[in-house]
Amino acid sequence: MKTAVVVLSRAGLDLARRLREAHPEATSIFGPSCVVGMCRGAPLRDDDRMLPILTGAFEAGEPGVFGWKGPLRVFFPNLWEQFEAIVAIMAVGIVVRLVGPLVSDKRRDPAVIAIDDAGRFAISVLGGHGAGANSLTHELAIVINAEPIVTTASDTYRLPAVDQIGREWRWSIERTENLTSVAASIMRRERVVVWQDAGSRDWWQSFGPWPDHFIRLGALSEWGGLQPAALLIISDSTLPCELPADRTLVYRPPTLVAGIGCRRGTSRETIASWFAHVFAAQGLAEASLSAVATVTLKADEPGLVDFAAARRIPLLVYAPEELDGQPGIETPSERVRAKIGIAAVAEPAALRAAGATRLLVSKQTGPGVTLAVARRLDDVAIVPSTTQ
Image 1: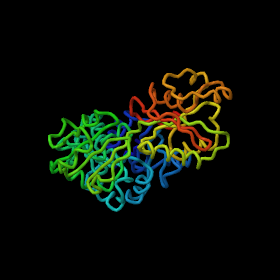
Image 2 (image 1 turned 90 degrees about the horizontal axis):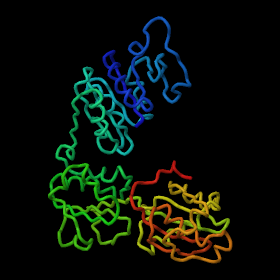
Image 3 (image 1 turned 30 degrees about the vertical axis):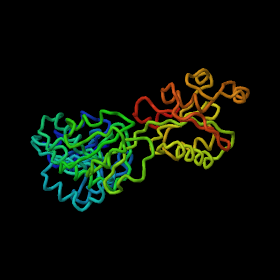
Image 4 (image 1 turned 90 degrees about the vertical axis):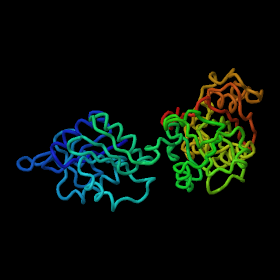
């Protein structure tokens, strides 16, 4: 996490340096000019190249350490806007007064942690789950040998935090408007049913033992007879509409790979339309698409490149010799072989990218597009920076 450590004293500066040693590439230290630099004599360097995004920041002569002049309440909003986490080495009361006017949305606000000048306590103040303050609090406490203070109910009682389920595997969440009500049902230990047919089965272990008020379903159709207070659905398939709209959370593991072949010049809109048609017809969730795969000959096809970019997923490309003879091809084509020397594009590309030997959906032919789907053996999301 891109982290700002804010200090008010020399003791705090010493603690901040210890914290930065753990993550030097992601941590910047900020303090009053008299603490991190010099009050008199040689001035701090006002170097716009060092931190152009922060108005009023000065390089303090020590790499990664910056000073400011004037009241912290004036400078602090700059940090709020530019960092994912703020570690404030000062009294909690000061932190509360600083962040109070800035808090707007827990989905966008940074994580805030307070540490006392003596380094005895690390306190998760804001963004415990969504922004990662709780986990960062534990990390920092280990570095400086402090006691971590985390007060969110799910951590206190070792129950699953609904906005954290599957986070390490990059699962997305649907029906987020129900997060608060479902979390409340979990905290009240009301009956919660869980249906899972995709993704890691170990998601619950990071929270503690399996809660005794959670019931695993053998079939999704069983939920009605149990009259649950909440439903957790973990699936890469479309779901029946009769699930209760006000107490269901749906988690989408990134388990699906689409292999795509297309004619030269096929538009993004055409590819997107056929993709949507195939996924709807096969009962697959578009949100679980983790990558698009094709042959190198199509690596620069604008419609395909734009389709992957629009969905913010990687476009993985493979040389013809990598796809030739891929196990699991169901519909080879002599026409394709005559054109590019291999029997298929969509099916072997999907299989290879997913690390699978069986297709979930065999080649579906549309207007200038062929598409096949394979399910990944694991559900760790393919990060776009790995795009070939």
